[in-house]
Length: 518
Image (tube, rainbow, N blue to C red; front, side, top):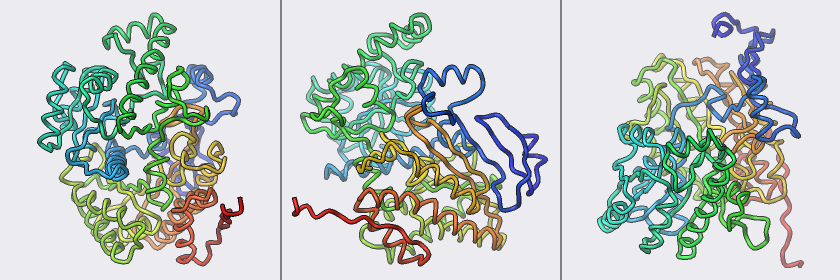
């Protein structure tokens, strides 16, 4: 804070994994802050390496937006989960109304699931072992009901489904209880997932069945080897119960929390017949990737620097007007994405998603982000609103290379590479970002992902307009071009469209093999 308070436009603050290395001479057009978190030599990027480095204070787990000074509370994950649940039901060709979504976790990120289920319009059952966080989510209104006895869950869910209720129910207990009992009762689950913190399985990210919350914590502290054994035993049982439901028609997806990865490491029956792939897709493989990211749609966000709720309401109206005007001439391929986000922004105030900063998030493509940002900048110039800080979730089109999540629908063999995320942060840095960040770890765990983000201050100037257009165009189309080169159909469509609008963009388009030759 001392450096930030005294720095000038001719300096850049350098942050090494939480350590303020210092202020270095730069120039007005350079980023004011450059952040790195957990960047280590690849051969030293295992979880045990992190434990050692973290204990020494030489590195840290930056997560995603938290380590990038762009965390806006659970609103971001609520929106992403809402989009996922809506598109999940579309994938199985069923309306959310009268549908059942079963999952687990009510933490800082996973706690968004029941709220998102309500917005989508289904019945949600979300299991959580921690009484404190369950009660917090209930008091916040993110959960409608809390049930502690599994025997009471089944009749309540059946009644909710029969009456087409929109309701979220927290089961205070282990999610394996839910999957197994619903199988015994032949209760049809439409969508299933899991969002326990399995990127950190041995330190409280996932709890074993057969132990109370307190007993598990005691076992974790006093006998970690036994705790690990019980966790892996539970993962095997968890996977077995899911398999029984999917055999009856449930659509299950991994929610990017490393559930399938850790279940496979535990020896669960989770692998496909080829012994390489998992039985179930990640939500990016089947939903977010082909339906959103390939077309350039991802979690664009902004924060009103004034802290004034009236400014946020004005930006909501500006963004909605921009999207509605764009939708009039949008191609058929992206009409659904446009409609979903117009509906989202119209209901944003009613859903009371703000926690702390006056911030908003919606899914937009490069064109949408640029037009919304320019409209904000014009409103700032006219004195209608205060300064606005643009950003996005790292979980986006271009910012993250994560083979089991953000880039899991890349099938050309490159999903374990990280060129895209590194290129992205470098490109953002010299195209006008106010601050940039790049991290090892985030969402799926240390050593499993490279992800980055940015912040950009809009001050109503012509310079801000120039920077926002240059940087936002790159920040999205970098990822589309990579997805296009991987032969993703939606991305090929999107990058060709981008080249039509920007003559200076020249991207190599793949030649598709004629299958009739073989």
